[in-house]
Length: 270
Ligand SMILES: Nc1ncnc2c1ncn2[C@@H]1O[C@H](COP(=O)(O)OP(=O)(O)OP(=O)(O)O)[C@@H](O)[C@H]1O
Ligand SMILES: Cc1ncsc1CCO
Ligand SMILES: [Mg+2]
Image (cartoon, rainbow, N blue to C red):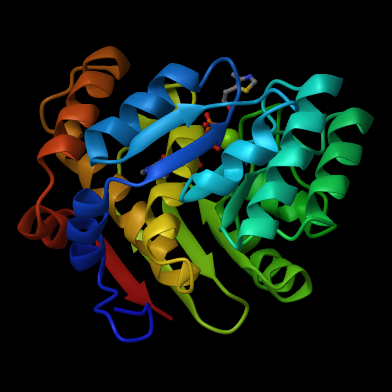
């Protein structure tokens, strides 16, 4: 069935994603590698962390989707990212950019500018990252956001239009736009920003959904963020702090079903 014809609700896409168990090529940072891979496995996808420039282009072509996160950069890694994005583009596979702290240094600004010329299908970042990517002044501190999501909504729309892609801004409530349609996703937990690399893991999960509906990246992004919002809200019920939350979160994602998704994540169509 084509993306146009199929049911693109988060619950249906979760079922489809688990059935397909897509291979997701992740180039992510050293901090995130383990939690991002475990997130994909818990949700039902198949992760592979592959960053060497000698193989990343070839690998991107065989994966269902590619995710590129610039959290811990080196010159060699940047080459690996660019080769991978080119490989994904040549094979017609979606790729997702996570512009971690791109505003912090010249090396990061240059890297993100080069990656944008390779046309990401989806950009997922926190509010400070999205504000800065759209050319605004953000209050971000390194990898952590210093801005509320509402303040990034216009920036996200402008960025989606100028880059012709889907943009997701995450935080207390998430905002997703393709420049024309926009939604907010409510749920999650205020313990989520207390665990490192939750956002990086979410970017990896966006890749899993994009892989199974490459022509509907807006719906794929909503589905991934709704799963996170629901699992986060459920995990909060049994957590006594960040450590127990992290464990409960993976379990909640693994056990998530349509009813729990419906109850614990709210999608506000704007
Ligand atoms: N205060 C909050 N309440 C509910 N959910 C939150 C809150 N803050 C973040 N989240 C959720 O946490 C997840 C990660 O988003 P966040 O914006 O923290 O990413 P990030 O800053 O890129 O994280 P990192 O760089 O550490 O990986 C998203 O699913 C988001 O909805
Ligand atoms: C803490 C940290 N530093 C570079 S990447 C990363 C993971 C959260 O973005
Ligand atoms: Mg981040």
